[in-house]
Length: 260
Image (cartoon, rainbow, N blue to C red; front, top):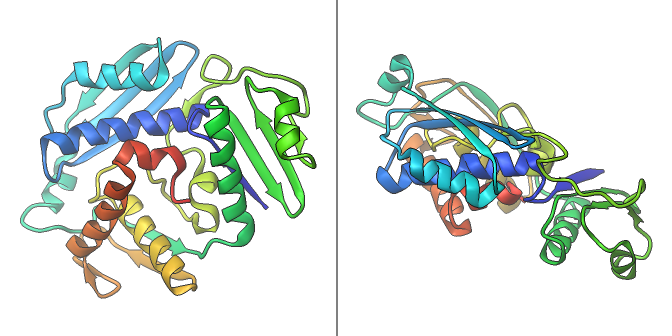
């Protein structure tokens, strides 16, 4: 049993905005320290950014408008906590405590990801999909139900009828769709709006990729300040995570679908 939402779901719009702001920071510095939270809905977009990187609010607004359309931005930028900043001086260290689990994707999870991506190519609007054994539930906004049923004749499509969706109908917030992002690899923290010093990003990616490669569940824990985890320096783990994110096109693109 698995649920997947598409990149136009309000929570994913929030994730994408957060990712776009992290991309802006990485365009200015090789290794910025940044954490972004976004709450969006009903014409407003609230953004809180913790960073020591000098960010252009014009670029942030442009990213918000590009992803979310006409909304009123409320942007607050504050410095990173000094204790957290000092933790990263001199070398790369784990930026927080955490537990992490990477689990190989099963057939059902791979299938719902494929279905969601296929439908999003046809209907790039708010959508949510569930696969529970043979039961497929498709909730797709602004879509022709008949056209979907031709493609997925056994699906339950929009059980309560047509709907519009988006941030005018619902609010979105960063890292609220952990199951959709991570499947069975969910533990604690979310993936989005953070630089690679944050274990929630780097170690979630690392354990997930290792699980897909080995076919076995991978479990790790870390403490803030750790310089080596699972036989790798934290710098090496950051490189692995960066290569994965770069292969997708950056943090905003990573936020569209998460890990699968």
